[in-house]
Structure formats: C-alpha cells, structure tokens
Image (tube, rainbow over all chains, first blue to last red):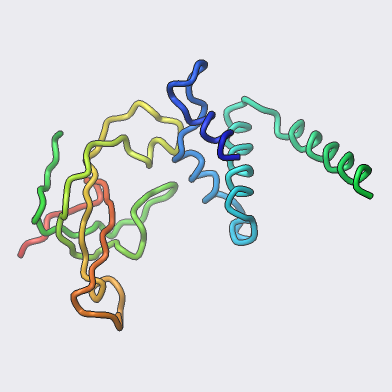
Length: 80
Length: 96
C-alpha cells in the first residue's frame, strides 16, 4: 500500500503525479465516522486512494469492487 | 521567501471555521503563541487537497505555545510548551 501511494504521489514519475498526499488525507477525513474509527492505518490509505482515483475517473469503483469480490471468493475456495 | 512574521513575533491563531481539508488543528485556534522559526514556503494544503496543485506558496511557521494556555486545567509543568506548524493565513499579529 505504501508503494502504491508513493507511486501515485510521485511528481517525478513518468506519466506524472496522480494524487497529492493532501488529497489522500482529504479522502481519509471524508469517510463515514464508523469507517474512520474502525479501519486500520493502511486500510484507510487504500479506501481513500480508491475514492480519489474514482473521483478523477482513473478507475471504475464498481470494477474494483467486483475484482475484490472475485479475489475474496478465490481465496475462500483455496483455503476452505 | 516573503514571510510576514519572524522568530520571536507574538501571534494569535485565527478562530474561523474551515469547511474541508485543513492542517490547522481546532484545539489551537484562538491561542496565542510565539513564532519559533520560519519553515519555508509551501503550497497550501487546503488547495492541494482538492487537486489544485499549482497554487501560490504560503509561508509555514513553527509556532510555540504554552501548554497551560492551550489546555484548560493543564496539570503538567507550567513552562511546558507545544510546537504547531501553521500556515501564514492562519496567523494574526498579537500585541505584547
């Protein structure tokens, strides 16, 4: 997660910067209070990064959530 | 560098509300402190947080406050201090 955020916020990277750390913070502060209180440190980074990238139209949130469900189901099959 | 304050200046933090991302903690608003150092010029996080990445820079200061003036009923040493980094547009001149 650290590497993803580092890559998204790096201005020197080919392709340029996609997010500032202040946008990441804003995304964390905008969560429902329950999520803010219950999610862990990097889970907050992940949730905020997805929200900011979706806001910019760089990713499709529904697609991310569908893929996450697929991976969770795969994990479930392999470990049950 | 176009800093309005210099180390040793007495300042007061503005008390206004701010809607949206802001780096000025609520507990420090309205408190009196002393400029400890000028940290440099940085872009404003209140704009950076909403995708405006090329705005003007703002001077950032490290300001020192007495803990007993920040927290009601502070039980520690009366000389204890807290340093908070604050952008220039949140600081007002305080006489004395």
